[in-house]
Length: 292
Image (tube, rainbow, N blue to C red):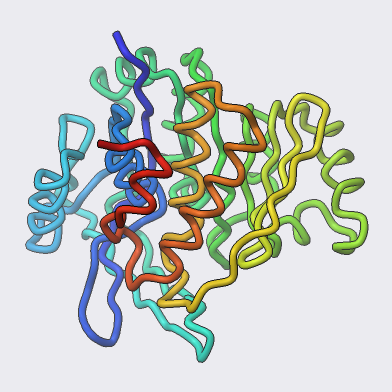
């Protein structure tokens, strides 16, 4: 059996001024993994409503629908309002409770976690107890590589939940703003702060993305940096998700870390240059990723 990645968490509609798009960080990561030829299982929960039916069809069209997509008779499918500032940086207004606040442990999900080579999860879906407990139970049972995409969405997190999830993770990915909050200190001593963070949580790999300035990774007792590639920004939605998908795909193939972080930054920059979280890859990106 080949390596499979389980992406766990929210799926939703992102509502922009000019329409709505399917979104949610775990789904975006899953979409990019599929584009990169990785075997993906996606676990979430939709409402039994027209929005949920539409998302269900979207997931089917994109090879992400399975028995891991639960349906909820009481809670609605999530619809998020996305606001873009003058620099096309996104902020999100996220309602609660919604269907993915109630992801249940069931045999299909337990089996998927047992079979996965890696499991990717974030903080947003863990804002309420039921989904959080489901995830923690899965992490207790699985031998998969555990990848925590911090992905803070104020006010939908507590530091105690972040600490709990970090303590369970082998790989932690966060952006620069999240690092400032969780690690502290200034950019001038970011490496020292990352080392301190690692000594507290004993993660195998810590990745901090820095927007147009690239990323820095601590892995196997060494630091790796990529300077980034400034682009004309379409919007920033999904750029970090595409970075993480590329990073995870490379980890599973044991690619050299410097090559991996450079490649992940290039893909993230490409997505930031486009509109939406999941643009089809152009010829340059496909060649970079060695896709047919």
